[in-house]
Length: 363
Ligand code: SF4
Image 1 (cartoon, rainbow, N blue to C red):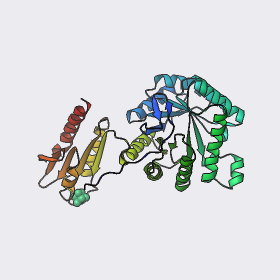
Image 2: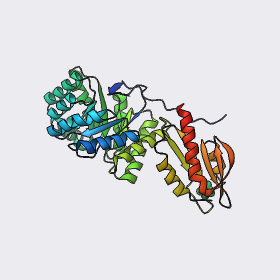
Image 3: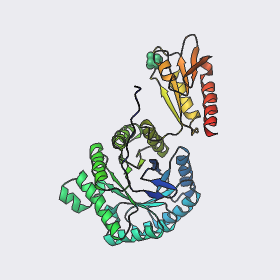
Image 4: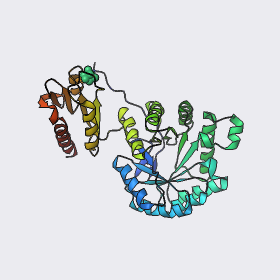
């Protein structure tokens, strides 16, 4: 019997609505990122939101550190192609202003928003405007009493912080909340999410916080988020990188595509190359990734250096190149060998055929 890719059974979370994007239940796992521009610079922030949306961000979060920024937030929301979440710390009045200024959701950290009364006021504003709240628990900013009780950040403390916030929200009749329980320590973070997933049915926003730079952060995030998604845990995600946020979205999508949880755009299978390669595989992949980044149809491209593993990969690809001899390569489409082409024709030929297949997929 042919081996099948396993289906991941997702945890059934309550569903919330972040603007036009459903989160939880059977909704696709959404990809989020966050702007790193000065929120007061509306043009720059809108441009970054657009860039994030172009590479597949479903939801974008914008930091709102002041009342002045809450005004700029209004203008940003008005020009955004995707729902915008307001990220607020310390000052509950800013959260209320953002609720009034078009936020699709509020993200607060109850550990630093202040008293029960202040959290309640934020909750009431969200309710008035029909917004969900993400309670963002972070191992680095837990309530002091929890640190005293548990001695140090741990899954129990993080889950208690989340559930304590939920109690406050629910005491005001507010149930449209999601949780995140982020930590930069991989195993702490994963354990907190695993524990919280069992303790509630709220949607979970996944992320390994402060994961690091592009390389290290991608690895850490992929490990942690991947471990959770494989267990069916997670309804939306953000990869946190000390890098261009566009990279966060690309990595988020790569994680989801790797686990067959969502499809979008091209997926390039490429060999690492060795002395058997019949052409410049690395350079070809780089050009194709850049030239085809606008494609939305889920298409698989195999760029293989030689006939050792090339024909096997070509069988399962929409378009494939397999290095041959004397400046010629084998060209495959939909698993069938179509013919031989010169290595100089690889890039234009692949681009032409991928665009043609993408157009067909849209019809
Ligand atoms: S497919 Fe060929 S060129 Fe690529 S790594 Fe394998 S043996 Fe080397």
